[in-house]
Length: 446
Image (spheres, one colour):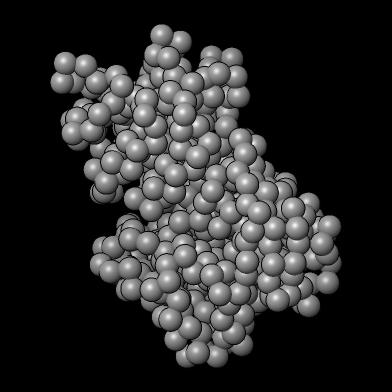
């Protein structure tokens, strides 16, 4: 029986190694596939943090309106099949295998691509675009991978709205060493004559956004300038708020995604929807409300166990993401005893992330861990050593226990003797994916 691993293995065997920004290879490949990326209308979502949640809101709204959708995101948490959802559901592994065989056959038949093979991400993106066309979707919500301007997803040719989520410092080795350089890579995706929507949470970047839009003759809109969020509340099971813009005004909008930062992602999605109302007449008030309420995005302040201690997962993996996570956890559970199971990649600013996590609660325990068998993951003892400069409830005699297996760390944090009211598992998305699979397959253990 064909599995997702079979398709992944074929992509990996045929791909060039590493991250290789550029559009020549993917452009050639899509041309050989008869340009599937133009067969449906789409939105292109870029940014540093919040892209996935914004995509989830948009996909859910369009599905609620009766449009057949494709949702393309990366990376996956547990299964490669998560990267492309058709009407909210993954395709069968056999469909991915068919796409992989067709895409890789184009490589072997083309002299240029044989000499300069696309990267893994480029191959998967081409396959996803091809599958979306084969599934005859009405609308695609596409999340950029690493960057924007040179990202494989930037070859979408029927984009009806360009969307830019929160921008901060990350992947500086590829995108630039200042937030302005990173923003320039993201803003470069705006398209001529197509509305562009930016969160605008960094006021210093709004002028730069307008400059890129003027250059591309794209109408600029930002949540900071063109929308108003009021009466915002955050609960343990979601958020509620009033939204107002020139084209859309709704009171008491509810979401199932938790956390103060999801209010920003929700407002960006609704601003984008407001700019597409004329083009998509089925986007009624009822559909928008239903879509926002039913949107789900695993691994982002996701509660897996509601009896105490509460068990929460979040994939905040850079300082901006961890800061927003810390603020939301403090707002929801800051008066509780919290245990944090944390694992991180060694190329991240984990010292700053530890400092942000340390401010969540007055009674905080840390359980440092890692992603087993992953070279890029910071080893648990090294993370424990870096954490020693901060105060933790479970730090004893100048030491902090570390856990090579993240499930051991979770079990310890959940143990009644630890006294935690809430256990937060956070850090690398690779960590969240590994843990989430075990926690959902064997929930009785936890």
